[in-house]
Picture 1: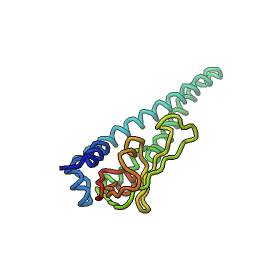
Picture 2: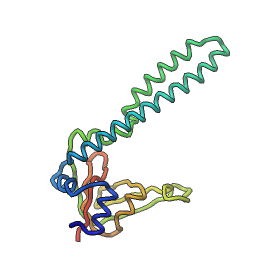
Picture 3: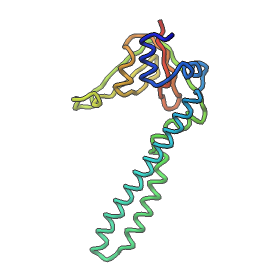
Picture 4: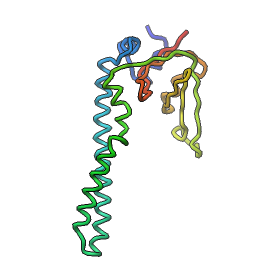
Length: 176
């Protein structure tokens, strides 16, 4: 049975005993694969829709300018060019590409040691999201939101299981 601190890690990081077992063996569980694939799809859809909105706004601005000069077709050409450029850049800018290669490979890395947590202000720290939260074990550094960051204790020993390229933490366990 999992301890209270392990239950907190499991709830905060959203993993199960089966996920932890698979991660210990160096691979993603089927549940984790399905979750991250779905997340990649949703992120990509949202990103592409955002690109289309930007192009439509750009085309609208150009059309407004063109109407004054009587060159409506310019808006259409600029819109198409903008869409092509944003679509090409999309794979570079899309946040889902950060873990796409990790998903393809299916490998999980682990590191064990003492947790070092740091929190840096963005310069206007009034709320918890106004901070950059970092966690480090040995030479491996992870970024985290305040909720995930608070699940770990500074100086306590953990084994962290993560996707190697994106450094996304999949599961963790405290070492006694």
